[in-house]
Length: 185
View 1 (spheres, rainbow, N blue to C red):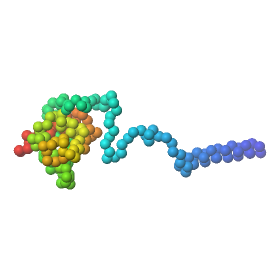
View 2 (cartoon, one colour; view 1 turned 60 degrees about the horizontal axis):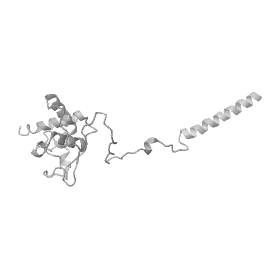
View 3 (tube, rainbow, N blue to C red; view 1 turned 135 degrees about the vertical axis):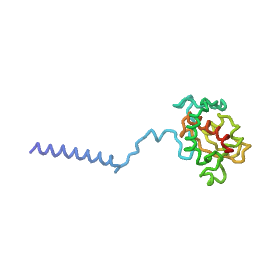
View 4 (cartoon, helix red, strand yellow; view 1 turned 45 degrees about the vertical axis):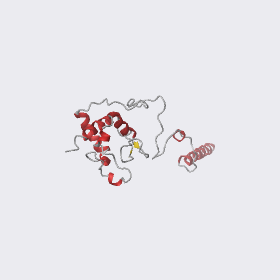
């Protein structure tokens, strides 16, 4: 009889502990735990990302050095690069700039105030490869038209540095260079 009473007490204590554990497990009583994701710096959607930490280098290596001017194109404009650039252009750029780069993509009809740039124009084609690379990397947000003062539009383009690797951005630049020659065809 004494053994039976001890078993009942042990099972009652275990049931009480299990019940208390389940109350917290199934969020009947919520406890706000400190999570490191809550206390770190972050930015919300549609906000500008935070600047990169000082002395840090991206996984791909440095694409360019800030403040050192436009980078030089390290990728030769051969058939492999321009073909790959054409494929990437069709995926990431064609919807706004159009199939032949004249700014007549399917989305451009909905962009009333800020039309996509005509990539075949002399203004764009006379820019250095590094300038085009930086525009693809950082995007263009120019409400006061100070970036391209000789262009009629103020321009707005999202940055594609998270969509395209450094090599892919240079391939797109090499493809953009071929658009001038296909303009008259």
